[in-house]
Length: 120
Image (cartoon, rainbow, N blue to C red; front, top):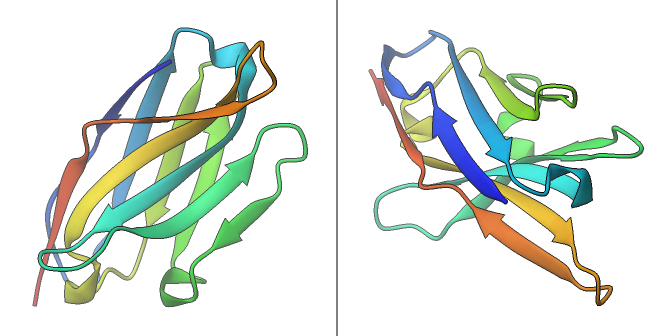
């Protein structure tokens, strides 16, 4: 599975951005997808996730109510709508996918990341 993120950029505090992650390859084996972020000098953290079969979503407390994760299964695109952005949201945002293998394992694939910068 290959993942390519897009949509990052510079935005003022209070503004919005929409990130997208296009998946290709063995997308039929994707069990879940998620957005993570890594701010300068900090560890990578989970932002939001979505499960393929149930559509169930989970969000980090820090972005609850401001970000929305969604997935277009037909187009194999994962989105992250980010509203009311804060300077603390500045980070490189990564898309990842949990893919089931023929051996019954879950392999995790990552995109290259897209930079989001929120100015105050």
